[in-house]
Length: 368
Image (cartoon, rainbow, N blue to C red; front, side, top):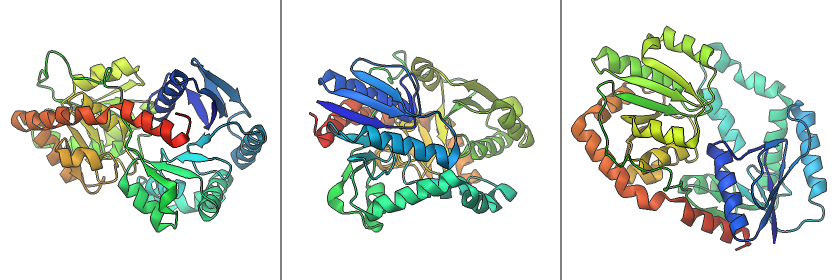
């Protein structure tokens, strides 16, 4: 049995979507399913996985067309399911890791300020690749839709509103590696510095500016808090933002870390600060919960469907609600409240493991 994955980038060493797909490839290999990855750039190969780089990255709309055309040619003699991470007509199965592209663009616009925000619509109109991706998404939704997997009931409702037949939508909340993401065996040891963690590779969309503002307010009110930023973040540009907001001395930039390094940072953190403008279901928040770390996030994060009812997260409605985020930081820093949130997160831990989710995906692909 074979399966094909269509993705822009393949790198099994990274976290987020790429780490998830690598874990899925490992599960398929364990079941004897060979995975062929078609991508624009890729590194690293696992057991049972072959990687084909079709066209060089970049190139705007013409480069995107060449990539889709090359992928379609490779799939003319289709063997097994074709899984894509965005809506394309020739995929049999789609996982909306980043949600709908149209929604992602609107969230990106909202995360901007001033002239950048005012000119965002014009920039999109002049961006050939964005126009192409929007058109592909609209045409796929209007045609014979592939099978679509989403992480939350909110995403299912969004697709229903767009006319997608309910029978083509599967809700399968993702999970994390519980062997890796686990609480410190020695228990939480409070740090007087109260270090919060921001963990993301798209700092603007995930609300880093909002995190800086909340940190500034909390510190002015007497909370001795710091923020550690982990991920592929343009440090110089964001250091300037931190300086303008008066928190430069309270922010450190760690860069991307290995999964083990992320676990160590989570275990040492008072809480994960994730004031995102859009996140279909933040794996970082589930990883934090699995480590017993309280989460501060927004209603725009699909992980709230699981963390909120369990009492493992403090949730604000709007990522620009600086006052609400600052109050949440103060609440998490309270020893008694922190202990309650930690206990709730650990209680949720058995339900956020990846094993059940991966089994669901294999069944959905029809290769189990």
